[in-house]
Image (tube, rainbow, N blue to C red; front, side, top):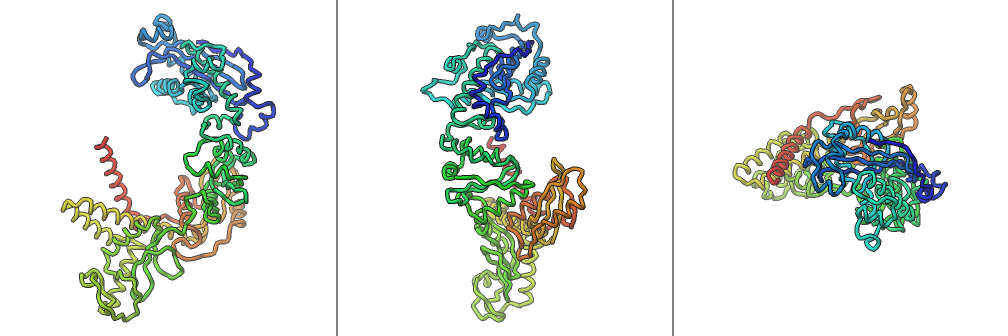
Length: 587
């Protein structure tokens, strides 16, 4: 096994990679290629697949940094099996050459130590890295979290067919005038790959790609015009927060959030977007505004609020929070159920929101099938004098329209509906399940599935509303969750995020929390299930409150343990099991 640090200097390559000495001052924009350390690795094996029993016969690697070779690693490996004759013809490695060589159990730890903290590079990386990972699994060794670059993939993106007919290592080495000719020996091929890697870095450098992050996400689908705009990310801090792309009139084009703002913003100029309109958005952008946030929750909430305020043309999610529907139990002499677009300050009971009107209609059908509340939409006084409808004649409505309904009996029916909406819908669940069982007994499975979907739509909405109300009824809640730097603390008022911060380790909590409360937003109570924020914001807060290790600092709150959720979970589990069984049968 050879492992040495004799250094070959390639200053001219280093200069071209770095773009000159000034490039080193831009470390905060990513890891410059000139500053990163790469280990270029190549393997020889007994076959093409470790899963089919093929073994490693040789490992060769070259460590490079800034265009300089700073170390090499080479070792034959005893594969504990005979090397096929055609492999010997291809590589020149014979059984006699490996009989006294160390086994992979000795070679792999030495290689991983050689490559510690480096970016791995290989030509056709899935082959070489796949063999190494397979060997690590067989030896019960943890595989380090190496970043991997593949020179074959980079070449496909950076070079045209007019330049090279294919991206074989031998073809690329000849094209770039490598000092080493690939010969199917691990170290020689690794050395040739180093020359190819540096040549590709030169090519990408001319396109403005100068960091490891940009190389790993490089694609030729990104236009030169997009790359030229990457300077828009230069001033963006690499911290959690929200970013806003602004157009030529300073109008907001798009709002997003990230734990690492600069890294995320730069991808818009260096990585091909699968979203069709993002390229158009980038072409219009004239600047990027960044808002640093103390926590990820604060960033997510700010994103929601900014999207709702600016309604950017290139955002789809959350741009129109009002485009949802609710089911409302009205407050009038003879209440009824209605699908509405907005929650009003009218003391009515609401469940939702439903993202699709069809879901609200399904839930409404389940309610009307269970309770004999009127379905007509006409306004009625206390003593209506109309004609009974068909539903009344069928006994499915108490028929207040013709004055025959008893007011107390109708009020009792309304109370049953209200309990299903706001507390425990066991009566509705039992009714729909009985109908499903009856339909299944008649082998009308498709109809039974429709009723299952109606029940699920209702339970999802009712459970959602109950969870919202449990939190929005709390005037003030201060909660803390573990954070790498201490504790992230949020002040919540009526379900709205009022303040956020990270309390460092070793800080006296009482004084710190008091200071945070002093800067918290004053929140005025409103009405409905989400009286002080959008339902989306309160749901983000609810998800954060489920963080493992969370502690309540001030105030009291408890997630609802009964109600609609307890009926919903068995339905979801049954549906999941049904889909798994179907997938198994189809597989």
